[in-house]
Amino acid sequence: MHPKKAVIIGAGIAGIASAIRLAVKGYNVEVFETNDYPGGKLSEIIVNGYRFDTGPSLFTMPQYVDELFKLAGKDPRTYFNYQKLDVLCRYFYADGTQISAYADTQKFAAEIAAKTTDTASSVIKFLAHSRDIYTITNHVFLERSLHRLQTYLRWDTLRSVFKLPRIDAMRTMHKANSSFFKDSRVVQFFDRYATYNGSNPYQAPATLNVIPHLEHHFGAYFPDGGMYSITLALEKLAEELDVKFYYHTKVDEVILQQGIVKGIKVKDKVIWSDIVISNMDVWFTYKKLLSGHIKLHPQKTLNQERSSSALIFYWGIKKPFPELDLHNIFFSDNYLLEFDHIWKKQTIYHDPTVYVNISSKLNTTDAPEGCENWFVMINVPADSGQDWDSQIAAARQNVISKLSKVLGVNVGSLITTEAVLDPRSIEFKTSSYKGSIYGTSSNSQFAAFLRHANASSKIKGLYFCGGSVHPGGGIPLCLLSAKIVAEMVTAN
Image (cartoon, rainbow, N blue to C red):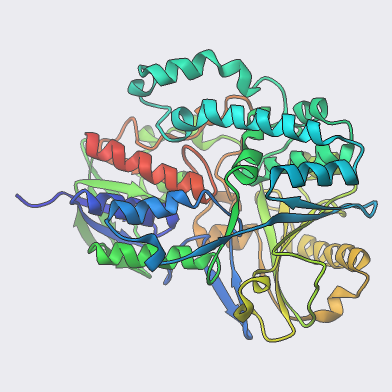
């Protein structure tokens, strides 16, 4: 009996993880990727001697990566290694306040008490609340499908359902944080976690306060060689499991017969398969690969509000900055107005919150000696036809002015090389509709239940993984989507 065949569209992190899981189960797996490199958003660029991780720069929940190697009977440490960070991020406020978010909870609470008018006990209480949300939601709502009856018939699901009022879904993140803290700087600190999935803290449910627990309990890490080493290590593992990768190979169509997946079409060639898993944005999967089957499209899901996008400058900086760390945040002076611009005006605020990631702090070969590689990102709206060229030019000057003022040096004069990624190029390079990084937004209390399922309810044999579907975007959730898909496939 021949092994079943699985075709995966897209070699993003979730696509590779799905390939590994199915290969371990004995499937014959082939992965088709439009680009000539793996990783999707989790890739890299090299410009004039500077190396940049192009997308996700925060590494949490490394156990989900390690699990893939263990499933294959491999030692994860022979493929890649990582170190735990003592400082999660450094924060710079408009009033001159600087806060180091220490990984150690007690030390972090003491830092908040020393730098703000809030107390250490208020921080401890908040993080306990964050842990409570995680305990209720993790195994039920993140590690399993929300769109299958079996999930809700389990006893642990029922127990979590009874505890749902404790996940704080009925008020906004900002309102909840304002009830825990009195100092606006601390409220802003914890409001920022809404941006981890491209949402607005003034609209998104306070359930998203689960995110701080992931950092402050499980920690944040940095992989040896940078974030892209995660992609390369998983690709290597997949190849050792006989997964076949076809790069620079665009899939044109998903082939159906009477509502059942039969394979894909690449140029004029049909590749037959028992199942198809799309790691492509769900919007493009339907609109491009299933364009002839409009009646099978989940129109309400495809019309949902998209998450925010990003504007990223990759700068080679000819000077070291010892006051900066791997992760750095320069806050806006008016957070509400910044999010109003992103979500209501669909434009870029003149004083945006700026994130600066400098991987050369820990991976010294990422920049020439005496220099640093700055990944400089601001949150921006998804693409809806804005005049991006003029907005990018204005944002660049505003970002340089902001960083120069805080750091006391003309940052613009230190830029030796530059590359730019904006919503248009994000869509082009990663097939993310409108350049939205996380698929749909989480700006409603029901957002988790409204994300597209990991399997089509109308097309037998069609599955979905990645940031545009359940449970969401970011490395840990994308890896969980692959786990959910593999369990659904092998259960059928």
